[in-house]
Image (cartoon, rainbow, N blue to C red; front, side, top):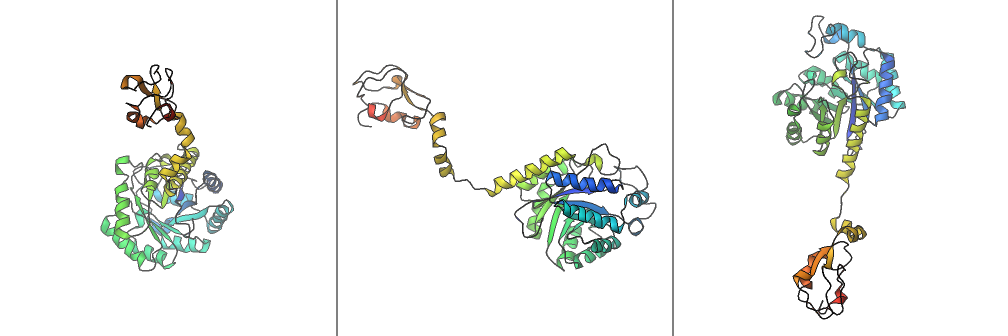
Length: 339
């Protein structure tokens, strides 16, 4: 999504490392994401030697292989990243990637990334934030592991260079339970920083993302996978293609509803023919002779709404009939004196 199109929610499909180092899978995930209607596809740019020690522990939700080996095995080279960016552009989506080192920022600058996503684990890495901010490019700042003090420092670090910053509420639990989604925190961020906000959603369903859009999120990031049965750190916490497509459709529907004002009176006028079918009128419950005074036991309320409106039934009481009114008939104003 371009900065100029701020009325539209930017939907980011987080591919991360779901491709498991397969360049073909990475390209296909771009195609799948584009077919779901997303605005951007986000990868992770890991350079193992630049970001982690060999004995760094794996996260609790993925113990498949040593972290260093995993990052090294699933990494792409410069030419592959450039091809992935071009593949995104060919399919009408923005290429994004999260750098996990200054070297990764330098690589992505060479690739030509147009916007940066700072992952939650890098919020306190102020040297990295400085380098990213100095590019002058828009930044999505995730916040899943930070305190308010740490997030304040990260935001202020970037604001020293520019204000093209969106702060994303995120809870770094995989999966994230609904109770920890923190939509209240997203709203607090908007008030605290006076910046656009969004949600990086790690729940297992689209509900938190949809709720965030209703509350004013300008960016939604959600993990995408071919199948939750795939190997790796993120697949089991991701949406599959059909689910992701339904998420995007839901977001677009909410956008339409939020941006479309309805005039209640004009709407009622537009539906006047429908009102005649569904609303009710004053009717005769018994045969009413000509010249009779209408009493409560003579009249009732039934469909259709083409006669005297039900709301005016009291106006009919006590009136004298000009003609005989058969049982189960609409009572019309011209049937009565002094209407």
